[in-house]
Length: 215
Ligand SMILES: [Cu+2]
Ligand SMILES: [Zn+2]
Image (cartoon, rainbow, N blue to C red; front, side, top):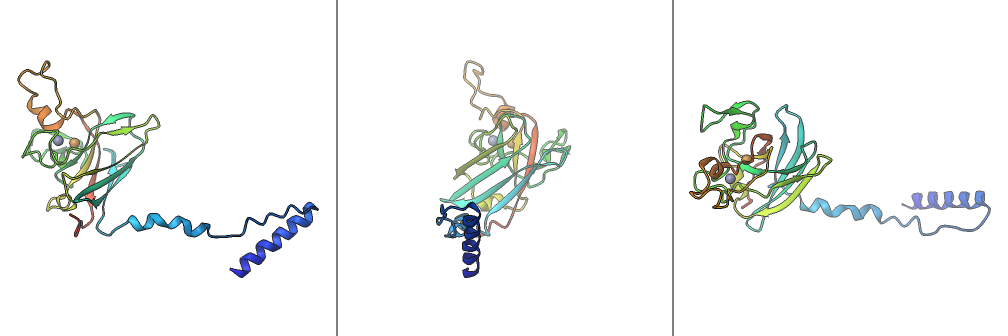
């Protein structure tokens, strides 16, 4: 450090000489600045999970991170290059993201990222109450979007079960199966109760990491 300080003083002296007047700037040269950048590093943990989101062409469109928080999971996602507006955003039950793949539950269905199966918890209850149902992702006009929230409906261990899990972005909006009775006197149909009608799957990311110790 002494070396740096003397270099700063020297250059300040040169500037002062060159300028020919004594407006010496003494406020520079106190160099605590570098250490102030550190705090972010402390939030990382080896238990955290991550996912790289790709579109059907395999192009990376974003990343998601999952960290244990308050007995649940804090989710942070950032995307770019997606169509503006609201998008259905879910945790799907299988950690496989293959374009143009066959649905594991319905072999007659084929489409992008169907390999990831349905929403986590789809067998137990209806959409809107699935543990894998998440807040909608809003994408700005630029194609960029970000979202951070906590869900206590899943744990990191749920996301790292035997067949893994995947984070999914849909083409359309999620209605959370919230269909007014005046449209559906007998209640929403099966598709709505399973999916929330968010449409095609446009980006998918297998969730990776051990997740051990997080619950
Ligand atoms: Cu989904
Ligand atoms: Zn759902």
